[in-house]
Length: 315
Image (tube, rainbow, N blue to C red; front, side):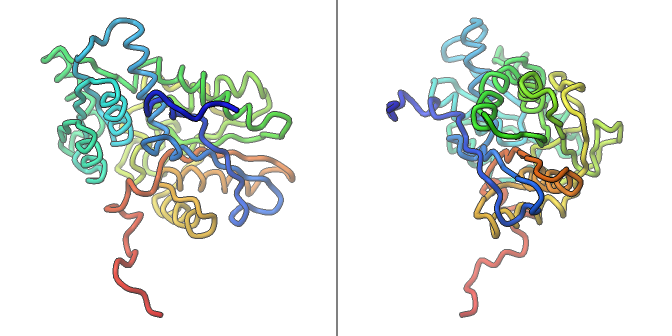
């Protein structure tokens, strides 16, 4: 039996479970979700944070005690704060002021500093600010939107995990959203090589379908689709694009919690809402796997929890 003793928290990143959907799935298909909230800081971004830092160490571009800086919608910043705390690097995050306050506090709780950027500057503004701070102070820029270590880690971990879990089983559709493009690009590359008939489905916000060539507009799916297509996103990595609106994402996240006991965030709800749309036309017996990027606890102050009673219920 493998040892369960880890040298530090970083050894627990990855090997997240795949769980069958029993009550929300249409009867003619099999639906599964890969629950990335089982990572130590409760999101898929733990993977890229560990990948980028260890790659930088191996290449000698990150020096002992050097400050790390990165632009983040929250989850990458939280993940980098964890990795930097475990390895002894100071960490500074730049983040658009509209992202949930929980994310700011979690990063600061992990010892990080958070610099907020104006909402009017969108995601591009926080990226620009991170670059400015790196150039001015000689800090290491994690550069998640352009760093090839991001998709490479998914090729080396996320995809093999999926293939291992579905060894000897059907897998017809794999559904994911995108933020940096790392999960989509890195995982798709390996899955397609092993399963040539796999249909890779990418989900996007209805108001920001950049891969469809549409203009960007604000949306509630934090972590999904900034106002630019990242450098590392492979435009050949998907077969189908499905749009999801805010209400669909929120309602699906709530349904996953109330009907499956799976507690996840808005982007997870959006991904599974897209998977349900795939299921509507999927052939009998198809197997669909959807990625669930993070936990619902990142969204307590957002629309996801709007209207949830915090007082007593009637008996």
